[in-house]
Length: 288
Image (cartoon, rainbow, N blue to C red; front, side, top):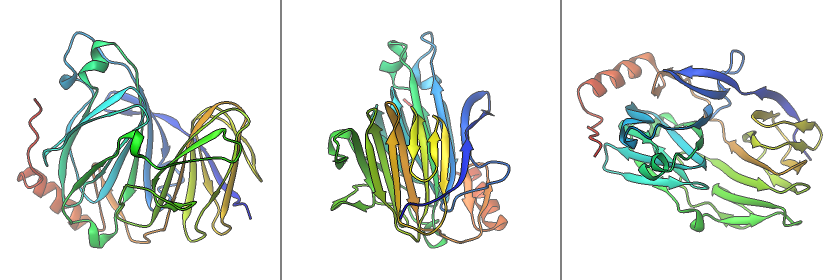
């Protein structure tokens, strides 16, 4: 049985320190879709008169959740205070568990700057259960050729299983909670049904194109579909070439307190995070 649609949320422009991007959650009415805290969609261009390490997002801290970056176009260069230094290209993603604290930067690659290429990314923040918020940070990157893939029966939708289990496949990303994340690229007319655990909260974010959701209707690009509880299937047909994310996760059901780049369970823990960052306990990132 297909899930009903609870909300259709258009992403809206926000200003993040002079950087304009689209935000689908949180909104004025929906703070989060537990365990998903935030979804940003950004399109960026870069100057060719400055090095890549002076552009993009500079070093900043995180604690208590997993920021995940999907590279739709271009490249993104991740560096962090744990020594990770990685460029992810179109079709790839970077999955970072901030844990007890980490400092990272998200720059364009130098090649992208040199060729005046475009960067398009989705950044998703996923909450971490309290018992894992203070575990050591970790960073996961899977080359696109190693991401498990399954096709729709009509061969028109390519589905990359990022994490979770589906159709006998197991995603290679190891999350901090029970999640299923699928990155889908559809050709016009393609149809696919996705089995979703009925204990999960579930969403679909439409990156590009138009799709039709069974039991609901037409959905345009840059909209977030939040599904009702219960039932166990989401069925999608592409009205034109499209790209979208299927996101589901078991609710953590814990109090959440967020201040800027920290997501904890109490204001005391937030203050501790600020103190630890100021004291250098999250490490130091020197970009070279």
